[in-house]
Length: 337
Length: 269
Image (cartoon, rainbow over all chains, first blue to last red; front, side, top):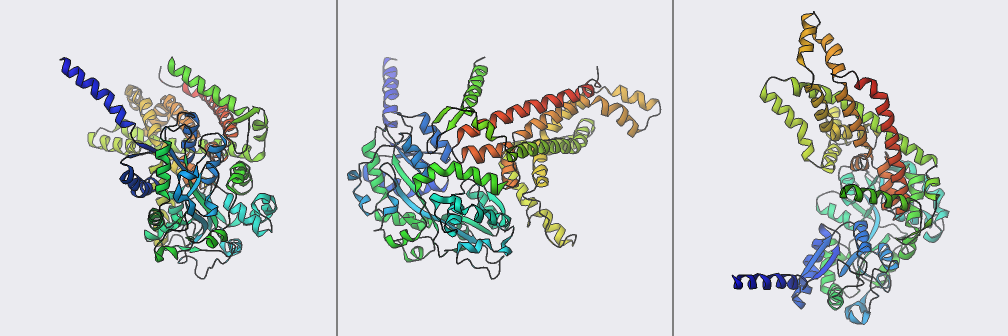
């Protein structure tokens, strides 16, 4: 009996010890989790022998949970969008990064160096995606083409983030995203062309696939996924550039496995891993030394050189984090309702 | 007791958040302010609140109209197979989430959806009718979401009616329609009132259906909370919308209850 109790005791203390021997990564669910699991996590585990566990959830859910767990984070690493990363950083939830511990980060594109707390993991663009089969003869050489009267009641854009179209309206009005008010009249003129506002990637896909909204301000990776599923979408690259989006990675403040976390981020910037991510998601690698296959490299919205990065419309993520509420409110009051 | 304390604590947290200032670029709320509530006085928000009440009313009444015959058949059917089939039809939607049910309605109501395809192929219409992103589309989908609750409540009300009342009316020469209008319907009023009130309250908190079918063009209070609060991190404003929405629900349901009191008294005693 004593032996059994002793064995149970050893088991009881051994199991938690083993459970701690892993790196916990917070990320969105679905294909994003799978992407990291199949690429970075696989390499990290191969190199270190440490397994990776994922905590998945929506952007805001994870942000709120991280805030509640401040100082004793549930995860060691967090992936989030660049401007949301600033909310983490401003709240003291991210560790200030010691880039000397991430040697492969030396090849990061300038635009991927978001802050001392979070760095770009991969990039994409928001641009114009359209169903050429439903809009014969339509072309989108400029963002201004969205304002054409024959597109009345045909456009959809994300309801969760109007920053792209607000920035575009400001630029087309001769201003910039920081002085977005100058584009208000321009954006109001687009109102008749909006048919709906999509709520998430699945909703965007459904509206484009069904032809309900044959034109969308769409996430490039999402459009490529739909194309792979047989939806005939054409992705335009307007002459003004597409709106750059960067998903980022950071080490959580209070993580007891910061050294492992740095190794994980270093694995993320391995050129081969970055090339693999670009191939799977049809996004842009965050480092400039990734050798991505030519088929992926030539896709609109995928950029591999410093010059290509700079051609995109880059809304300062810090300003975006501060302006999101103001933009969202203005958009709801003046465009959506 | 513990649940009540936790619930009260959550309500107090929401209330205090609604009275705090939003700090751009931060998750922390600022000092105390009434600005979130004064911002709600804009016509846009009043319109969304009115739309919400209107959609809830339309949904509750439409659900009653569709649900009453189903509940009646469910209670009065003598054939066990028919009864079981009706029960399955009524209850099955409860096993699907609101999102799944709503996506199925997108397939039905879309421009290339089932209804438009049938009407176009039969030559009834030349252009697809726009059901999506309209109040009509949202109400149709909400009726489906609310139906099981309504039918269950109506069935409970109908099953409590003593059939001897109807037999007595029939023995005095009343036809089936007269029996229904003068005996069954009045005596089922408690179930009707309970069903309509529950459907109204149920619809008030609907989110996924107006979000997906409404496509940002038909907004209810919950959608506004999501749009202006959570997707833009302005949690104090979201909290003020929640408090205002809760107050409106209490007021409207109290009025509904007050107005329906005479009807409830008609029920069996």
